[in-house]
Image 1 (cartoon, rainbow, N blue to C red):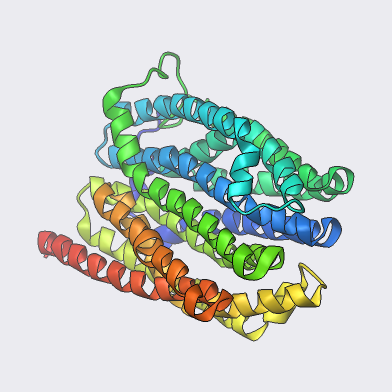
Image 2: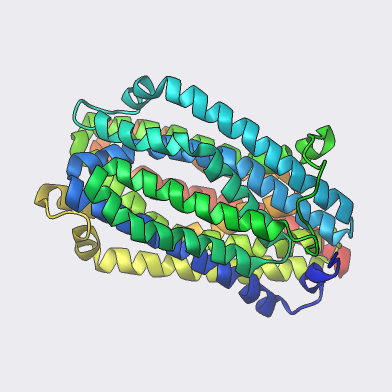
Length: 447
């Protein structure tokens, strides 16, 4: 066993280490984001505005699926990193086995329940007679491959946590490339359902390669016989750390439901389609920050486990600076070239006008979003589950949800768009205060 493989996490210079781990994740997440963008462009241009609105209606279920995936993936990768920092290799090994079993159980249950009640759920989300068939076709395929998606996401996170960021990047790039090849053909043949089929096939192929990598017995963490029985202590640790992104994505599901219902009430299917466009453009930059966070996570987890608090502070500071630079770039592009961006998705002038307005408002305080994301991920990485959950919930439930319900009564559809940047501003101030408090506490332990 190459027990010393991840030791560089505690010795290498932080800027170089962050580049080594974050760049592959950024490349992988950027490729994935670009694919999703192109996917929506194909759907919007070839399947029409109603198909684009139908895709937007699936966002709550996609967020919920991501919530269950991150519940296991983030909890597992953080705990593996901490155990490796403590040189507790047997426990890191046991986490991997529990990850596989948990993903199978949760993925199967999620698929069965949602498929049984799919139409009523989509109607509750705001589907109309025009958009329901498109949303149903897409989600039937995505839910059918749910176990594949969950397992792929979790095992890819394990690769990063165990010192293989480039292999994790390769797996993501394989997924994107396969998807990009299949997507236009499948959409041409089967419409929006084809986009979902291409996604699942690509993830299945990449998952097979990730499993092959983790079968290597020379790797610090690998598959082995008899390691898949759930252990209460390990499951509890995985779920406690993973509860923060789970809560964040679950509340995001609730927010999108309320958002879509508000859009339908004040703007109809057209407004929902506009939100689908804005959401895809927003995530183009969010995914880059997520790549930075994925690169930071194993470094922060390892150094926290090794009690190297000065290095811990350096990695979060460097990551935050990079994240703010990314979201500031997004802000500049969105405010200067909104018509060009929206024009990639549609030529419908009414839809374009609404999407441009929503884009400019949504990106109003976008530069600070990067900092808020890094803060939440930092606390997840070091196992501070309670703090991470609190920060995840503040933006979504405490600030955004009330604003979404109140502002439209005064300024109509614009109130729904405005609720997002206002919530970003307030939640960033809360995150900053929490970060300053904890960094001062860590500083007292090494100064």
